Amino acid sequence: MKHSQRNIIGKVIALTKQIYLMKPENESGFSSSFFAGKQPFQSFGLEWWLTKKASSLCEEIADMAISFDNQLRGGDRESFCITIKQTLQENSGNSKLFDSNCLFLRQAETLFDARANNNNIQEFATSLWSHMHSDLVGSISHWLILYPLRQVGSSSFNLNFDGISILSSTDQDNWQKYSKHYLVGDWNPVTGYDASGSTMNDFIGVPTWLLCEVSGTALGARQLAKSRMRTFIAILFSFLDAITPALLSKSGANVASYSIQFPSNGNCGRAMASIGELVPPLLTYPIKTLECTLIEVQDWYTQRSQAHEKSAQRANVASHFLHYGIMDSELDRFIHFFITLDSLFGERSQVEENIKKGINHTFLGDSTWEKRAEYLFKLRNDLIHGGISQIRDWERLDHYRRYFKSHPMNDVKTAAMIGLKNYFKLKTFEHLFTDKLSGI
Image (cartoon, rainbow, N blue to C red; front, side, top):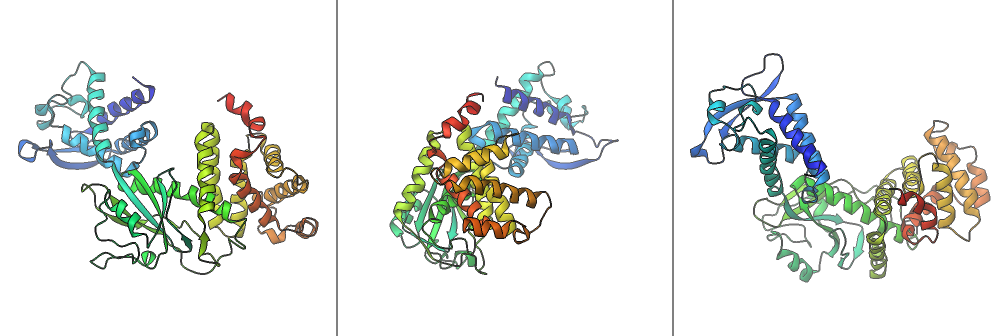
């Protein structure tokens, strides 16, 4: 039995000990009334009480299941907790697991005490977890999730990584292909409407959609898609920054924060729900994204797939902080761009040294970056440690601008974006990090 499964089974045992068949005298509990069993006409009414500890154990089991089982990676804690409790209720009438007389007549104190085989706790818990696991897997569906790229113009493109693709709203041929695998009904990507007229402002007049095909619960799939979309947008912007003047200049326009998701089967319905703001309100739009740029982005993903696991994880984390920076105002933007560099190059107890080293190797041939990195780190320290609250208050700002003919914000953005964009291409990458990676 794997270590992770043993841990989960231990939590299952603990959970059954925190479900009382009578209201606990010295502890508050949450009452739950239901029909024991899966068949309503072959079940009996039952009531039990879950302690606060039981709720915490449900969350722990859910988190462990998501962490250790690839089949469940798209789940979410809230939905899984509901499923776990339903599994317990449905299997309370299972004679192989529980003594129905003991339950119905309340001849035991807890659900654990009412198990059918009092002499084999491990077998009981393993069997109960098997039912839970089966139900958790059954709660997973395959989804198509769309986010409106309102300010991006692009032809359709399949990234072939992370389930990510781009759909031009007028590309009916590609949309028909998705329609064969997902219950999209008569929803139209051009208008954002279906035949009933149901839509949201975020979905009206969208030229381009960002798509993610992902498995999970309705909420869990959306959370996973959000994470993957963050990475994609960060990498895309890293490539666009060099060819799009004033890319991150912001307007006062509203930002899309809702997605629409379609299931692959009839067990779930479509959902229009918040996924968060993923693209800032850009001053210059639409941003024309050419296929050659998307191919460069795709090549980054190919390199990530071939990299060491920890290197790939570093790049994923860095992409999320870069995305935070893209979305933020000036101060938070600077800090998040710097954290991007830390995620790529930093090592505990050698943060400053390794970030400077990483920046220098990112800009080989440009000797000014060694000095820029030193200044940027000083600015970072002043901001984080309370020396100043705004970049314009930095005492070295005028000197920096005169000496480098640039601005710290622009330089930290450039370092973060080019560092992430070229992360897997750095000639010194293995020299810098192989020793640390080999010890993992």
